[in-house]
Image 1 (cartoon, rainbow, N blue to C red):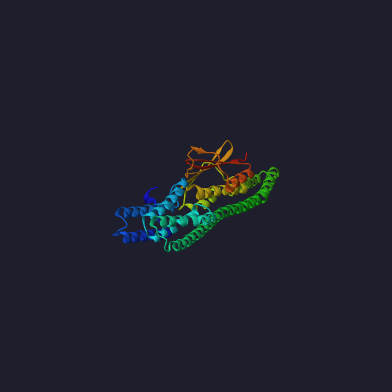
Image 2: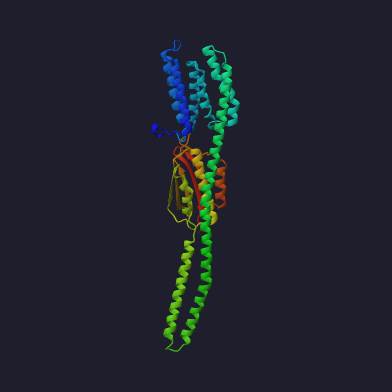
Length: 385
């Protein structure tokens, strides 16, 4: 990750200011101290710099792509830097860094586990401080107070994480609702056009056909001087009948569902978060409402998985026909954390199982694969013969 890609949110700014104030206070109190050497002061400042840089990397939304384990390692390094500071500096207020570190934990381990382990990782720095600086006066009171601060940071960040999750779910539901609403409106217009086309065909077409037959009979039985006018009327009736049939065909054709329009409504709100490209190489307007709805929900689930898990910044949806089958190929560029070239044994959660069930309902199939280049979903639907 390049430094130019770092983005500092307001809550990150507050943490960075706190780290800066703690570092500056250390420097101000320790410079000129007879018990702390210049080398130790430089080492202390270096720890603050490394802690700051590590915090920025860890708290970024998309720092390492698929290498999620790297962030977990950095969290451990951050804790190690706190221990080093406790051993190098006699300032107890350095425990503020442990509060900042605690705020990161809800994103890396279950909240209950972090809560149960909090007394341990909160006590270790103070035990080290007591051993290095041979100090016990009021030490455990400070340790207890800062432990409560750590708990407060844990609870607040867990609440924030839950709020973010609820917001994401609401946004996902809203995107899917808009896309489905678009499909429903298209289906309603299609149904209305089909009804009108059927009425025109059955009523107007029927009467014009009857009129043509009567004019044919009249043309054969009429006197020679009347036949030209009757033949002219017969030609007009046949022309009108042809126009009616063409109009009915056009109404049925333009009444087909447009899945691409619904996909646009689904992906448009995501343009600031991920780049979605749709490449359609075949006509998909013949899909039924059930087929279009299920495919739309499968694509929505793939988008959701990409946004939640892959940390990808790009996704391509390719739609094409092959061997009388409709293929919908969905690929992101999130990459896999696995060291092997490909990961075929994808662990399926409820989302992927839901995609399989929806495709099975359409007599289709869904396959998934994960590799270093990204996650791949292939939906195959038999085309109507």
